[in-house]
Length: 202
Image (cartoon, rainbow, N blue to C red):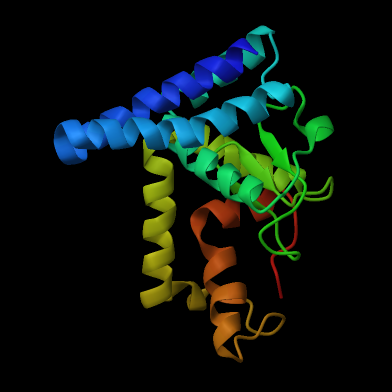
């Protein structure tokens, strides 16, 4: 329970600081409210699922997620809040002691999605792939999401990945495949994760 309360409190402070930097005193108040609206569900979910163990590893992961990687945790809290609004369920068994919050339902039935420490729609066959994204976020902290976004933009407008793409087994023959088969599996964070586990879409 203490981890959940601390998580919510730290996200309120984080939201308030971001708000103040953006819009002064009014921004501070708005940011604190946003931090509460996101941090409270995340704190509840991580506490009720036992995401962070009370052992040294669990404490270490909690500290990393709420300091260096707090931006990713905040983004994950937004992702989780949206899932909860749509009635999606926590996977408490998979989340327990894992250092992440798992949601049963995904954004798409074909793919799992991980933002920060929130993983939606995963399965045992792809969980290691998703855990790579959790690790990447923890390793790169506040740089992770901007670097991912920058890579998506770059590979969308300048598709250099066409130079090494497997055109024979994964042809780009319609507009949607440009993103699903082309851009998506070639961005750096996905390419690394697919090398560790999973098969890129074809």
